[in-house]
Image (cartoon, rainbow, N blue to C red; front, side, top):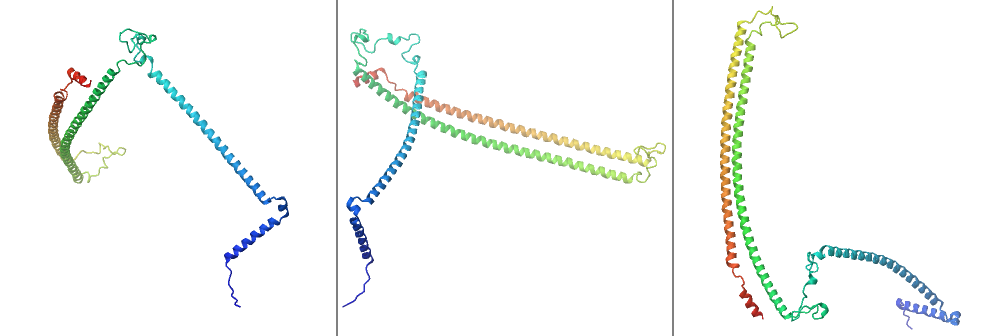
Length: 379
């Protein structure tokens, strides 16, 4: 009557198809004559065989890995055993060396070089009340027996209490001594720093004074050298001017000197051709001699002035050195006075500390009566 075309659901189609396939497989399994007659599922058997083979292969791989790891573990165990054996041997050797070096018989308290059997000859540790000696075979005393155990315990307690109080006193005294030593070291360090600062300032002032004196000496020396060089230049200029003047005013430039000149020896003069010196030449020579004499005199005066200046400079340098030495002596004397005062102050402080220790701390010494009272109270 009504025709309605609707599309099927894909999930329903897939479910129906899967159910249909399962049913076909079930029919094939039921209608198979061999499986129905023999009752054997070949596919299941094949699956079981494949599963067993995979399991055997996995077990073989596991056994091979276990064997490999077991070999490695065996090697490691052997190495550890060797190391442990070597460690044991080293420890035994160290123990043996210690016994041979530190625990020798001659180092023991019971050993006597003159009487090695001193221990065997001595009395036993505990005696009976009748004070009669009995050997170990008499069974009169036993090892570890203590007849006065209560007394010994009290003595041990008193000794322990005394040792504890003494340790506390020693610790307190050590703390006080350490604080005093720290304070004294701090004061000494501050004093040494102040002294070092003062000495550094004095050294700096001396260095500045020496540098000033050296600068003045260098300036004086440079001025002297400059004056000497100026005199030398002036003298050289005068000599050059005199030479030029002599050469220009003498007759040597106007006369022909080749007439009296020797042909093979130019520096020689032919006596038969030379008629002597002219008055002008003699006057020029005398003039040149006078110039040389004046130059010599000027040079002598310059040298004399230079020597005078050097002497004055030497005297001033010596005075400066004397003044520096006097300053150095004064600084050394001042340093010795300061060091002496510092040492005296330090000695006074140490003496005061020793007096304080002797008069305050170490005065309360325990007497025999104190020990007797202490023993009575402890009982």
